[in-house]
Amino acid sequence: MKFLRILLFPFAIIYGFITSIRNFFFDKGILKSTSFDIPVIAVGNLSVGGTGKTPQIEYLIRLLSEKYKIATLSRGYKRKSEGFVLANATSNAEILGDEPFQYFQKFRQIQVAVDANRTNGIQQLLAQKNPPEIILLDDAFQHRKVKADLYILLTAYTDLYCDDFMLPTGNLRESRSGAHRATIVIITKCPPTLSLDEKNKIKAKLKLNSNQQLFFTAINYDDAAFSKSGQIPVAEIQKLDKILLAGIAKPEPFFDYLKKEDDEVMKFPDHHDFSENEISDIITKANNKLIVTTEKDYVRIADKFPEEQLFYLPIKSEFLGNANVFDKSILDFVEQFSTK
Image (cartoon, rainbow, N blue to C red; front, top):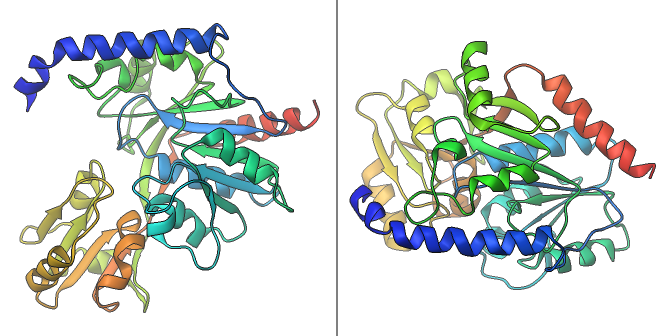
């Protein structure tokens, strides 16, 4: 695979040139971006998948939803519906996509919508009888037809954008220079013991502008895994014979956290649509053992497994210092926007 990516280097140069021209046209106003009268916060990345957007969106929901009416707007990757859809009691992962459905299940106090056309999606949300006061755009860093008011750029500790290259040779969707649009850059999935010296080394590598803020986060797992019928403490789960199942990008930390030596690990592509044969094969291999999966996978497959057998482990994004600084930056931005 690595050799193939090297062979595709000329295509990466072409792709990088095309995306750079597109960004230049947006920067110069030749291609138009639409602004809105409420705060729009875009969370995204420069690379494909695996940077922790979902827990970061959930962090923002928890931070903002007690005081403001919040809506999330996603593309709804791999959903089987089209156009604008606002989540309601009949929605499921097939209609919304797995991540938006996860938001809807966990945060019933917010509006959750999907639309590949983010401009139309925002317009539809604002046309509701009870419109949101803040919109969180999920995975929209490259969606420049909407001009967000604050951009949060995520990059994983083990795969920093400054060390990467354009698709298909690397994993970047656009040039590293696109990072200049970010108001806030977050290094995600860091070791919880990350030292100040290493933080400073990463900061030096990124070469951020003086007006950009840098934060570091780690994945924090819940103390229990959950099913429809109950929960089991993680300390107990780690000791039990089980199958670990994931259809997400970069699931290795999840596996490493729960796995004991003889556990079977089953890894599938990100947003994988499990077939009936695959479900049957997983149940057969489990042979009545527990099946533990990620929360994002669980919302897609919960109804396909015995509820007493399938469990999921929730995760949260946890700041490695300066959480109060991040929170204040977001809250101050919203308050200042509201007083314009």
